[in-house]
Length: 253
Ligand SMILES: Nc1ncnc2c1ncn2[C@@H]1O[C@H](COP(=O)(O)OP(=O)(O)O)[C@@H](O)[C@H]1O
Ligand SMILES: [Mg+2]
Image (tube, rainbow, N blue to C red; front, top):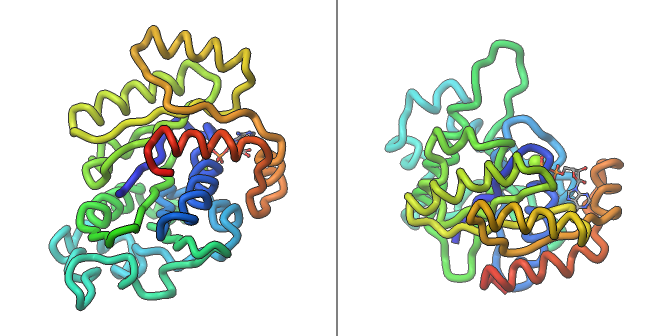
């Protein structure tokens, strides 16, 4: 299964990606793909080093559109046929202490180097052609907002987990994600993050009016917040129980 974790910037996609990956790693072989072309914190939150970007394996960002889907697939294919996470060379995968494999697509770093479109294209091609073994699961921590929809990245996934924080804006984006998932026959789940019981109630009512079903709610957890503040391996307190419940509702635990 390939699940994209999407939503407005700052809603908690990266924090939840790490917590979900950790919990799922007790049951599955988990790969986490960092497809955010800007942020750097994910490897630290996961407790590992950044791997070399997959774009580099293909000769760099500028080559990605030139070589196109067929040649990207050829370059990534292993002897066993199909793109298997286990076949990706080690320097392009870092491992967390729990054994979660982290891959990163690429980062925009230099003035005038061009947009992130080739990275989105690579994520789509990679996900679409990925052949997973029984018990393997892939999570994609996406960039802020929904620009990746325009590039059709979701085509390569089986479902989207939309993360909303306490803003109407993030529910509006979740709604757009839901509509696209329905049109593309993908699973869709919605999680409200960083909520208190009072906030959760307000958001619930708004979501209901919008026709959005809520799969789970994650409480505001100062331990999570502190990890990002200090740039350290992600710690979570009571919110971990909420994430477990979310995964149960998603039928993954
Ligand atoms: N449940 C939570 N409780 C408290 N803070 C949270 C929670 N989830 C995320 N955060 C904080 O919100 C901020 C944005 O989280 P992050 O995962 O980087 O968001 P995104 O990846 O969506 O941009 C960080 O400071 C993070 O620690
Ligand atoms: Mg992030």
